[in-house]
Image (cartoon, rainbow, N blue to C red; front, side, top):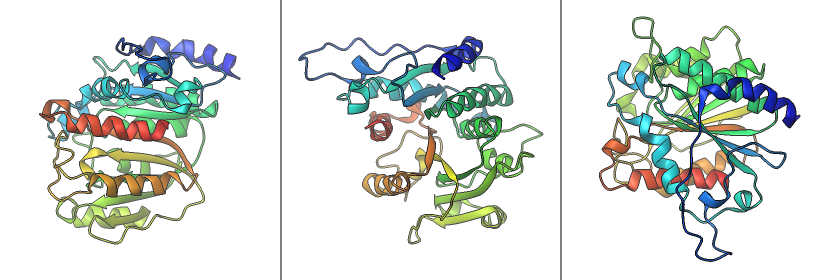
Length: 304
């Protein structure tokens, strides 16, 4: 099966840019770091696959503050310094690099991501995608379409991201309207947790509720019931700006770090999460580096 993946993967590898983790000194043999253990190729041992999506053209179209395309590199720089997890020590984590988004339109970049995600899903590998703007998630969703798999999406986010296209162009505020209305009907339920009432138009709230569920940040949080696999997407602007200033749309009353982590842990513990993306880290707005460090800790949690 992996040989078949490599044959297919070689066809798309021209659309990937490899990433090399910093050369961190090995101080003691029993104190290895993630940078020492994450592999750059998929093997028979691989279970978790990191992919970077360094792209924020959708943020620009959505009139946001660009900079999220630098997110994948920034997260990896911090992730590489952390103590190696059991999964890393057992060579179960591969980082196959970044989608080559240079010069691509939103739709072209999303198609490339979707093709790669579908290949990973078909090999029963677990993709973890580092964005990028939230346009990342529609490319992520296209992977399920191409793999002919039905899913629910849980979006932990201060916004619903179900805006209309802008003059026919997809953007960071439209991915889930695109997924809901996709002709494949692969999306069976769309669920938003953590939305801010002052960030969600009434029409958008009703639209989400008609197609899934909406839980505002000031409500008691319950997880949606679904029998489907889950695509989990985490927009870092769901967190309070005291711990997450490095985003395009800062949140003055968002989730605290521990509150958000508990929620994410509860979603993971359903056993239904099939893939994850973490989006909207903007290192250019992260003056003291705490956002990048927190984002890396979040990814580390998934790799533990």
